[in-house]
Length: 304
Image 1 (tube, rainbow, N blue to C red):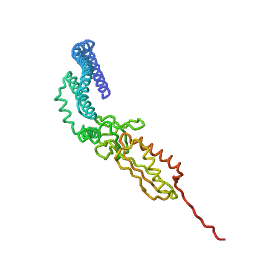
Image 2 (cartoon, rainbow, N blue to C red; image 1 turned 180 degrees about the vertical axis):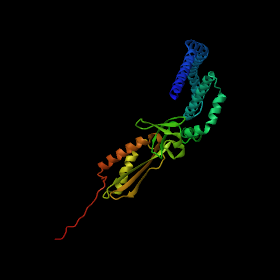
Image 3 (cartoon, one colour; image 1 turned 120 degrees about the vertical axis):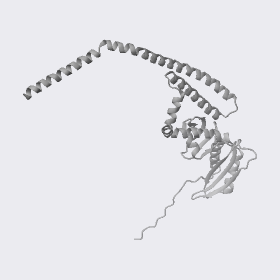
C-alpha cells in the first residue's frame, strides 16, 4: 500500500512541476520579450543620448578650456608674478576648469553638484587618509610659493637625500629639477618644505674655496706666491673682494694650502674648474710636489 501511495505522490509532484514549467514558458514568451524591449526602448535611447551629449560636452569643453588657458597663460606672463607662481596658478585654474566640466557632464545624468559635494564630504575622512601624501605635497607647493625659499631658475640641493639641480618648474605636487648632466629629478614638494635645503644661486655672488696639499719639503712662501700669481691671472674675479691664500692644515702627508676668492654666482663653476687646473700647471712648472698618501713600514730582523 505504501509503495502505491509513493507512486501516486511522485506522479502528482511530476505533474505539478510540468504544469509550473509550462506556465512559466507561456509567461516568458516572445511577445513578452518584445513588449519588454518596447517598454525599455525609450529609457535605453534616453541613456544613449545622454552618453552622446556627455561625450560632445567633454570634447567641446576640453577645447574651450585649452583656449581659455592660453588666454590665462598670456595674462599671467604679462603680470609681475614669479614664474613659479604663474606655473602653479595655471595648474590650479586648469584643474578647476576640468572639475567644473566634470560636474556639467554629471549633471546630464541627473547627478547635481550638491550630491557630489555630499558624497565627497561623507567620504572626506577616507579620501583624506588615501590622499594624505598628495595633499601634503600640494600644501608644500603652496608654502613654497608663499615663503619663496627658491624660485624657478635657482640651483638648489636637498640636504636629506642629496638631490640637486636647477629648478625648472614648481608643479602642484612636485618640483622639477634639471641636473648639470640634463637629468630630470621630480622631488615631492613636502620633502622640500619638511627638511633643509641649500639654495646655491639665491645670492648674486659666491665664494670659491680650493684646497691643495703640497709636500712638507716645499717652500710654503714660494707656494703661496705661485698661487697668488695664478689668482691674479683669473679675469672673472670680483673687484674689491678679498683674496685669501692661507695654510689650512698640517695633514699627515701634506701641508694643505687654501685659496679663497669671490665671483659672480653664474661664474662659480667656470672659475673653480679653471683655477684648479691652472694651480696644478703652476705647481708642476715650479717643481712643487703634490704628494699622495704614503705609508712607511719598518721591521726588525729576528735575531738568530
